[in-house]
Image 1: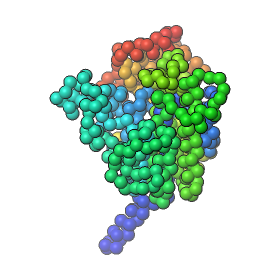
Image 2: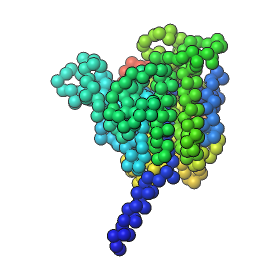
Image 3: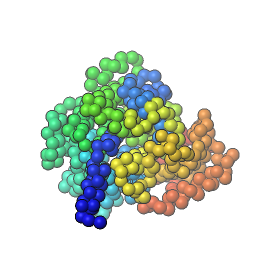
Length: 480
């Protein structure tokens, strides 16, 4: 074979890697949004989410879409790495930041020739609650006494989105943003902090739209991480005026914030349409965990600065944020790709945010990554593959652990054991462990085996903190 052959082969491979035939991918990740709070799920009647509903009507709606943790940081780490975050020790908010040696979706997509970007909440850099990281990387301080200001920004920089595979970043929560492009279209700036005026959700939508406008001629991956409806609750008159009826104030603000996200989804889809790339763009819409109900959904003043109900709901599921019962981990989950997925499909088998990375990896034409814990969902949704995408899904959080295998879910909290039939009308309202002891034993065995593969091995048998018991007594105290 001569040199010309190898040159042609090289050029062919490069064309395949960088071809616009590969779909663009946008992952929209809401924050503390419960299963009930998109209209298409049909659980609550006071919502106005027509654009999100249209995503599902023209795409695929998952009724059993799960996150890997019922809390922000570990859930985001699971999504972006495509691996159970317990494998690298990020069990909950107070352990470690997303380790620098973990390969993220963004880095994989870069290798496939995609331009990558993100906006909104990041939350994966070091913080003062991460005692394990502080003890290792700040050995001269007492970890329990560290305050937020004690962790200098220089230590956070390697963990920021701009150093984790995102070419373009507009990272931030409300007004302060870490950026290397502007909402006016300027690009290729050195990452720096700015104060961006405007309403936080409109800013995050505008950052997504501007990225699409700047990069519509090449395959792209974008992560739109809306900071809502997470507290502090905040909405403009434009969105609040859409909900004039009698209701709690926290519910009104949640609905207004969801309306802002919904408007954003509409603008994103319109931009794709205007650029002629809507058909070949896969859009995910997911939440990072269930709503924090704070047990009784107390309507505290909007000005309240502590943790409080965010106005969202988890109907019909049991539990809330902080629990690996369904209310904490079963979330809105939609996939929309006009050129590649069926229209109007309702998919009832269990899927996970772990599947986002595996699906992106496959669509980008990259080799199968054996260390990913997710599954490429496209063949299952297109009926090219039969059966469930996962033999089992696993969770471990605080003093709780769970496994779902088929329709059955084994759940333990503080050593108390439960077995639920997730296909039954009672779901987690009826413990059937006494009727099916063999099933429970089998699932528990698989769960314990999974636990041996984690950085901190094992399955908890006692409460991690007082909140475990509070949740268990409140939500499961009435059942055996």
